[in-house]
Amino acid sequence: MLEAASGDQAAFAALFDRHVQGVARFAYRFVGDRARAEELAQDIFVKLYRHARSYRPNAKFKTFLFKIAANHCLNEVRRGEYRVKHTTHEAEAEASGGEIREARAASPDEELHGKELERAVGEALGQMSERERAAFTMCRFEGMAYREIALALAASEAAVKSLIHRATLAVARKLSELQAGAVPARSRA
Amino acid sequence: MSCGFEEDLTAYVDRELPQLRLRQLEEHLPSCGDCAGTLALVRRAVRALEAMPAFVPSPQLRRDVLDRISEEVPLLDRLRALLQPRALVPALSACAVLAVVVAVQLGRGPGPRAEDSPLLLADASELELVQDMELMEDMDVLGLESPEDLDVVEHLQELEGQP
Image (cartoon, rainbow over all chains, first blue to last red; front, side, top):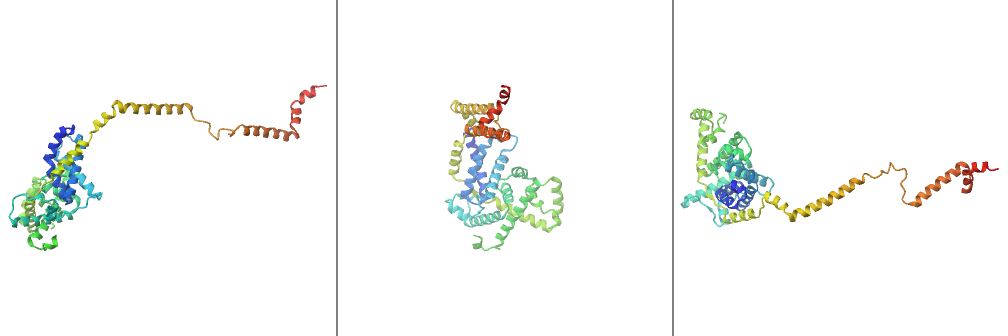
């Protein structure tokens, strides 16, 4: 990071390669739309490059990066630049030419479950507050500790604990409905 | 749920509870069906989320970001560019001209204010008119009818001295 901060573009490219997946995934879970997520990820990395000199090595780099990412996503959504979409997995896969890949090889039954899971989680994310969504995404998909999330969101750890609990419970209930077959598959599209 | 532990259940699954609270919750769980049910729900959800499909960004994203970065000029380099002679000389010349203009304006000092000036006149004919008005007023005071009479008044002492 320090090399990237001194304007070393090769060092920045290495940094990009190491963190692009996490940033793009965060943006995707935040807005629910692949193309918009990539636009956001692009802006986040440009901001990172511009603000690289303000990074202090005593802070964890991932926290610094996700502070920029969370601020950018929250600001853009609040400005109305991006409306949270959370499209279905099938629609996303069709739009992207199948670039949203399954994490592992799956049987047809498991794949169906994966698509249903994606849809239910997308719906739950779309119904959360922006801060709940940001905290939940950093915790569940990026594996960040509550303390790091609190730093990234400029919130207390107690607030983050509460945000993550509410968001996890919302997703858990949505998945529970899915497993119980409470919501007909067609109406969930 | 009113047992006061509900908000701790997700943090418990995430191993984010402080030791003391962790012990209290573990003592509480066997006796609270609601907490046990919610805990099972949260655990199932967390396990399911771990199996979510991966999001793979397109290769175009890398190209776009690196293109934009290469167009970005760091702040220090922008300052250095401003200090180059080809940018510095015109800028300093402009500053020098500006400084001279400001110095000249300050050297002149403030001009007379309208209220301080007894009479502001547009041209010489107005001054002549004013002088004539003074003359006419003098003639009125003395009860004279022509400027020649005023001349006589001015030289009255000389005339009186004559035999």
